[in-house]
Length: 631
Figure 1 (cartoon, rainbow, N blue to C red):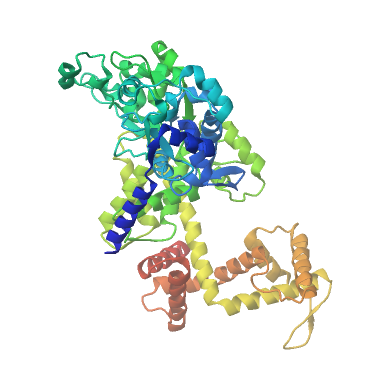
Figure 2 (tube, rainbow, N blue to C red; figure 1 turned 90 degrees about the horizontal axis):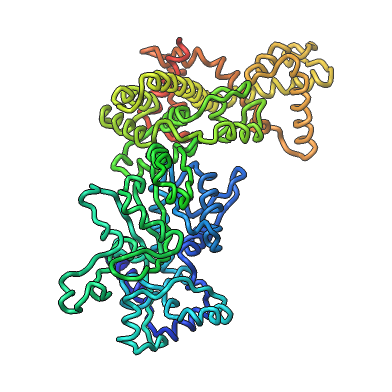
């Protein structure tokens, strides 16, 4: 009953939004709300802008795309600011076809789908309301009723520029149904819908021999010719082509460059002049955003053909490369899994991350910049701190290969291999090793991969495995250290006592014998070396710790285990290093020591409660780390 109530409420809301009146009534609306008379490009831009935007990593992140598009902030910003924004201001770019060009599964179709769904929803808001001449199959703009010689006066009075001419059908209706009285022409509010073919059109190429141009521009209704007497009578014509139906909104051309030439030439007039030819009529005006998508190979072939020069000059190409950020690639896989029937399967932490590492590595170009290998580049792109490099280096790396991300492994392949791992294992949990194994096995089945690329990709899988090894050890390290928290705190306090004595050139007193001792250099170095503090840098690091310690003391705060991030990391690594034998023995022995086993169970419980593992994946992780330590 709950869903039926929601359906009922939805229907009532749609009925509430409906409006019908005369052209005179419509002009009153236009006078108060000029946005109802905006162009298709302006409507799309305002729709995107209305969702809001935030600044992230120096880029504008448009919330409109936020939940569906990952890692393409720069491409989206360029799309909005270099195409939609100037097009909304009636600049020349609105007379261009928007062509999204990029590799398969890179997000092109998703962007177009978001625009279509967005327009459907936006047309139901006050800001995105659209009105059309009632009964018009092309949802024609009512302002086309204003005669050409009065449009300058209309611009001065209303501040709205009118473009386009009244269609042949509505010209006839104006005379026959309304006796030329435009003020009485009925106008209605329309709502964009791809399913109902209102304001959104989609065209897909098929067999050129069988596909008819009527699919785009409509066709003669032969059953009515006898009634109306002529093929040039607009009442004997079906204005039901995709270009007709997409008027006032957007028209999507899927794989546009695969279309037969006769379809492409119709776009020349539509893009430049805002009209197209249909049947035996004068040019028909249409206001629509034309967006197409293709891959790089098709595009290169298209522009190499001299016959396509006229159309090529009417295209604005927006590259849509693969995502190059590991964290965002993880989000892509999470989204795909949530949309599947695999959502119930437990995927261990970092399983998707290693897949993302592999994917991103295949898409990166080898930099010639000194000191930068592909792994460092990957980390820098993902916003991680890499010693010796900063944001300026990241900007330089991106400029080095402008087309970076146009090649590599696509997300669909990876999600297919994750699916394969789930099916093959037939359990409710998979881990990072299962994913890497499946990725490796799948390379032999990937027909489009050359032997050279296959060898390179195998190396990337090995790198992803090494990255996971470090992640796994750190994960277990944190969980183990937490179980030995008292030991960690004791070790830190001991270190701080020695640092204080070292910096103040004091002695320490043995709490058992009472004798004075020099600061324990061996202890301090054993901790500092865990985080790469060199012999030359030790003094500065210790003084930094002492300054932090003093600052806490002055403000009445207690310096604890979490007060200095790098020191905490060093303590964790040192303690875990001391506990390695415990981990190795406990995970490899069939009859581990009872006290050790108790600690291990605490570690497993922590991995489950704090790190997102289940009992299966936590035990698998612990055994794997134990095997790493035993090597």
